Length: 507
Image 1: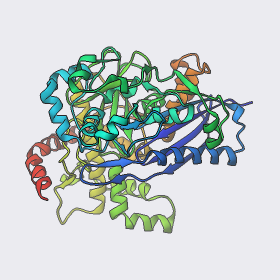
Image 2: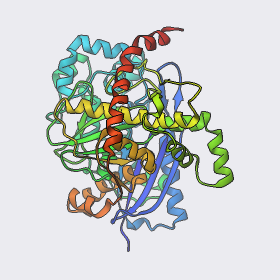
Image 3: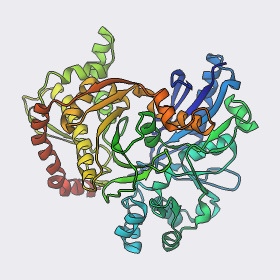
């Protein structure tokens, strides 16, 4: 009887469900997309039922099509997007659409928080900047603009705890998602009573904090009927998708750094002490007693997805005629262009930008276009712009002595040899690439395996499940050339900030 672990990933664009064996091999995987609602300026939401429907449909489909014996499923792990506000009433009903991390409507509330408590003080406690993307300003926005719904709220949940609740009926809050609250002390892992009181937030609205691998409950009869899972199957609390992805990449030790190339981009540096930087993101790793210093950018693989969707008709046609996919074709086109794209620089601020500039008004831009530039120049400059944004975050982390030994690249863009080598050349860092397409769900599965005792510890789990399939070493000649272009890239935001603000002010 092969023992299986089930992982559920609640992402920005869809839900991914993956079944693994204890060696980390994928038995089956299913992805179901759902809609992101852009209601008005800076208002970006998901619908909770869409998440749950995607979970149920995906699990049932795999169990049926692969004829999986549910007795073999030994644990369920969950990961999910960060900074999602999910208010439920006492009956477990979600009271409003979910404000996700892209939602920036709470700008006024974020500014009020800075004045009320002091930005430096809030950063010292939470280890994070005060920005409308975070959960705290969203709570204050709801309290001000939707007081009736706020008064009905029994608990606030995050993405993975909501799915855990739907599966088990138990309410939880894990350490790794605590970074979304500015009244969560990143040093102690406890809620700060004084900060919460000053902000007018009742701590009774938040569940007790548990380890990410702690079992919070078993599959209920109702959830079993909806998902096809066996009643009583243990479910662990789970954690933040970026932290689970970091674990699934095999990043456990100080200095190891996960580089994320999914829809959004970013990096997660593993540290054993909470090194806060006011321009970066600090949270608990899903591994106990470790932290992650993170840089989160909106410009990751989504930048090339945008180009493919809007301007990729040529690549799509070639893929239809000759096979392959349009992203592989774009990677090949990028190799025809030299480092720096002959002076074309792309700013990947496609939905404002998070770290390290934290500006909702920032815009994407090509700088250096001319009649000599081709589609291939644009493709390579997009890849380089994402690489520059990674370097920007890594350089910022160095300011608090967060040392980076090597990068481990995961996500869709890690499948591109060209893009990964380009990032290695820009940063001057070695990059390992594990089997990356399932790194996030593998991390969630490892949590379930450790929590249920099927792995002795995280070291054993990673050794057994994570396999590096490709290594990249930086071309230092290219690196020296990129340093010149990066210096220009770094200065562009400051030069264009007023322009971005002016563009945003036009109604």
